[in-house]
Length: 313
Image: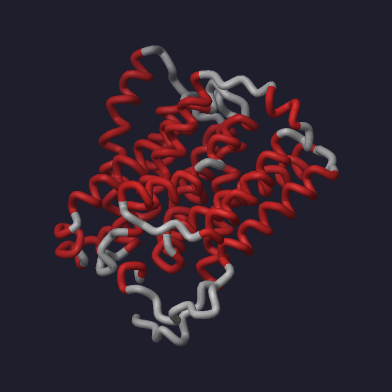
């Protein structure tokens, strides 16, 4: 259903992108908590099998009806399956086997910066000063939270192989965001998800086979089952649909900036579930993150009211 340019509002997109960051924060926390029980390839495979089981009855009929548009964009569709389904999540889960949650979130915070840089270098997108300023301020807020307001703690961070894998995951997601942004607006987003998940699963299967051959089996305990259900539904089905919609509505750079909310939600989840104290550096970091989002989202007075066709779903 088409919506007139005058009635279009980014408010819903902002809500969806905020929920996406919340669901992804839960994914990071849970994956780290269960890293000793569920190996990374198994978690990635189980995640997308659950997601596919939930989506297939709804997504596949829409994908079939939209097959002409999907076929016309097949190269981009395959890339999304390999980058967004197989690549990002497998790298994240592998990284969380070897790095701390603090280091992982810090590496993940590079994503908005990478989106801007890759967009400028490879897509020829113009960097706007207010976007750069907003991302920089938000990133400062992330650093304040992670180093607990003490620069000495930041200087002491040690980056291991897991940190490198997390940085590669951040690079992977920046590429995914830009590829999604350039997707033909005629491609149905739900149908797309029903197609790229099987592509990603095919890429994960060999890695899973290798993991099993190394003796890494998973017992189907209640805790493991709940983990698979959560990561398969919230950060997979719902978050991907929300994120794709958000990118289509407000663009790659603005959507990527919402990833800076993940450390905020991570802090809140830690306070609620781990009984941690809310201290002054938490408040300062949250203020900087939201301040950066406000700066990057502020519209210029002469902004065009219509949404470019390339950014419409």
